[in-house]
Length: 178
Image (cartoon, rainbow, N blue to C red; front, side, top):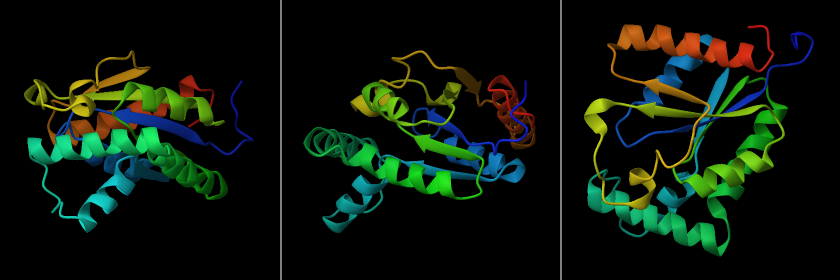
């Protein structure tokens, strides 16, 4: 039975190594669905930028952000608290898809256990982005089993079409008529 009379509200925890194309794919999803995208690293980046981080994405900066995120997760659960604030706002707006960008397996499990909407995990892989990044957040992305995996090794037009099809499939798998 489809949930036709219920507003579609799906949470997709999206993960993948740096440069896998997660933001680009979320942008494609926004072409077919009312969606929003938030990352558990956003409040950490804001703090880091006030104290010297210049937005670099090199391995040294990625490790710095990963370590800082771990400290805040242990101290006051800032990454999850931030995402839960965004999630609660999502429940009140007209969007259908909520992309939660989370890298660490424990943080993924924690956030997933707190949301009440249908929630799936999605790994984005890209063959040219394999290997070690030198930090636990990037290097551990494949340490858990995901509900869905998308190999992002296609041209942009194909990726756009396939990713929107995947969003439709996820909706249908969850019982929504899309």
